[in-house]
Image 1 (tube, rainbow, N blue to C red):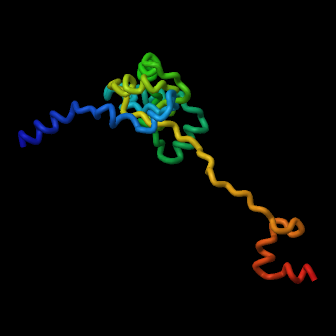
Image 2 (cartoon, helix red, strand yellow):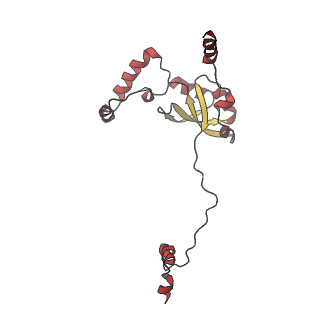
Image 3 (cartoon, one colour):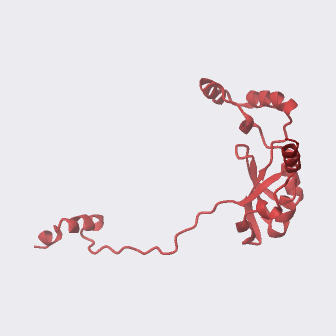
Length: 167
């Protein structure tokens, strides 16, 4: 039993290596739009009730009533991001774009050389690139065989009605 406690005690302070904290796609460009996910929201156990009450008071009436119908589900995800964590990332070269309290993350413009410094912060859980829409490369324009039939050409051709129209 003592061995198990020693192992868990040793692993408690374990931090993931920087290479595992940063998604490899973040290194593709000189500057990257990246989501920086935080480890927590900066709320200690003794502050939990006070912060939760503050969140409920700031919530719009309609949102409060909607949640009250569903057994008043207010939780940790409703807490705002811890401002000090955002300021730490900005101090290490990140430029804030957007915050998401539900993801417990914020998106930043970050230079490639600043990624390792930001990932080394104790408050940072992981860094991933912001998703991008990529246009498919091989788009072929479909030429209509006949302007007369328009978009119905394939359907009419399937039923072999085009020769009837040509008579």
